[in-house]
Image (cartoon, rainbow, N blue to C red; front, side, top):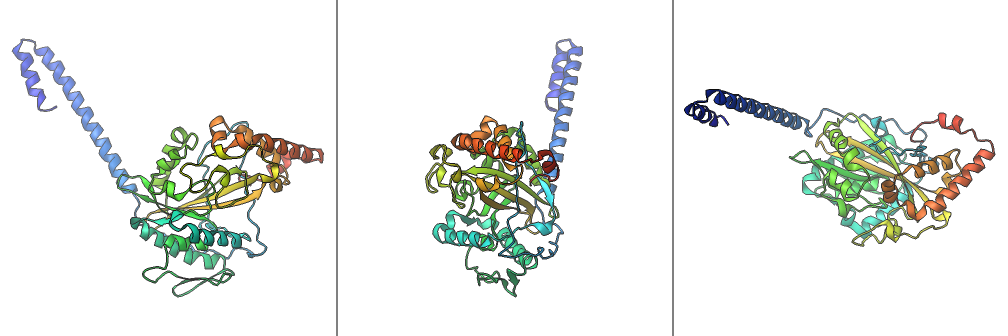
Length: 400
C-alpha cells in the first residue's frame, strides 16, 4: 500500500486534478492505518493466546481428609438427580466449582466397577485404553496424582508404598516407578477408580486433542471413535445438540483459562433400555462401524428402563498443563429412583422439555411413551399420599 501512494499522487497531478490525488491519498492512508490497527490487534491476541497456553503452574494438590465414615460395604452412591422441571431445557456447560479434596468419589459399587474394568481391559485392551506418545508425561502425572490422593482420601482401601500404591481389598500392588511400566499408565489409573478418564492435550494452534484415555464404562461412545480429535470435533462428530451455537465458544474459552487450583464438576443424564453398564447393546454392537438409537427396541417394559447419570470433573494438571476429565457413571433402574419424592414428576417434566434435537440425541422416541406414562402415574401416587412438592424441592438444590 505504501509503495502505491507516490504513483497515485503524481498520476493525478499529471492529469491536472490535484484534489483527486489528495482524496485518493487520504483514502489510502486510512486503509493503511486500518491494516496496521488490525495487525496490532491480531498480534495482541496472539500474545495473549501464547500466555494462556498450558504451562506448568505452581500448584500442589492439597492432602485430602479421609472420606467421612467411608466403607466398601455401606457407603452408597451419591444420589445425583441432574434434571430440572420444564418447560424449557437449557443447553449449558452446567459447571460448578468443587473442592479439590472431593475430586474422586468411590462407594460400595466399587467392586463391580473394578471387575467390569478388569474384564474389559483383558478383552478389549487398546480399543478402550490408549496413550499417544506426546501425552505420556501427562498420563504419568495423572497416575502420580491418583497415587498420592487415594490413600489419603480412602485409607481403608488404599495404602501408599515406596514405589506406588496397594489395593487393600483386591491385593493388587501397582509399581509406578518401574521402567517400562507393566501396562499403559492410563490403564493403571483406570484400575484405581470407578471413573473413566480422558486427557486433553493442548496443541500449538491452541486446540485441545484427546490423546490419552481409559474409556471402559461409557455406555454410548467409544474411545476408538474419538481418539486424536479436537474438543470441537468430539462434540460435532457425535451431533451433540446445539453445540456450535451455544457451547463451543464458551467451552474453548473455559479450557484456555482453566487454572490448576480450581476444580469443576458437571452432571448429565440419559435413559438406557438395557442393563449393561459398560456398553449399551440397544444402540448396536460395540464393534459395529455405526451405532445409533435406530437399532433399539421400542416401548420395552418399564423394568428395562435405566437411569444413567454422569458426574464429570475437569482439572488442569499442574506440571504438564493437560486437562483431565474424570467421568463417573451412576446406573440405577428407573423403577428404583421413581420411589423417591418428587423424582418421577420432575424427570417427566424434564423429558418433555427436550426439543426435537435433544430428544433424538437421547433416544426419546424409543422409550418416551412407556416411560412418561409410568412416571406420570408414580407422580400422581405421590400427590395422592400428600406429597408437598414445593416443600421438598425447595429443600434441596441441583443436582440432587
